[in-house]
Image (tube, rainbow, N blue to C red; front, side, top):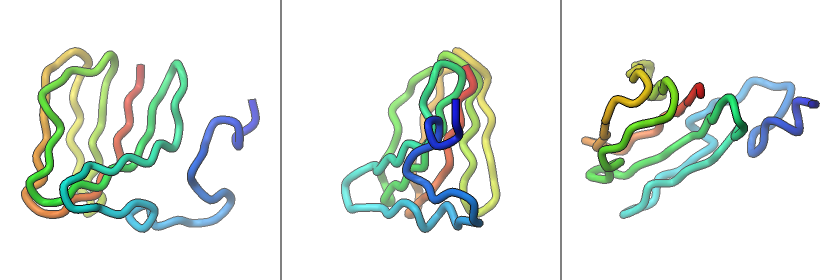
Length: 96
């Protein structure tokens, strides 16, 4: 499988500021998927203040990398939720 068949919605062969690839919109959680297959899911999210992910669990280990430099790693099948206390952009990685 070629890389352009795995990745989407992202420029190739150059440095990219991930935070600039997604923009928040009032009252919405914005999702920009980058990879989705049987082994991994990688998406960028933008959330306005007060927006949230409801409690859920993932079928694999997950990492929420807040694009200001902090990350939260959650093991598989552990319920979790997230609420934006301020406008938020994050990179979500799920390893199945």
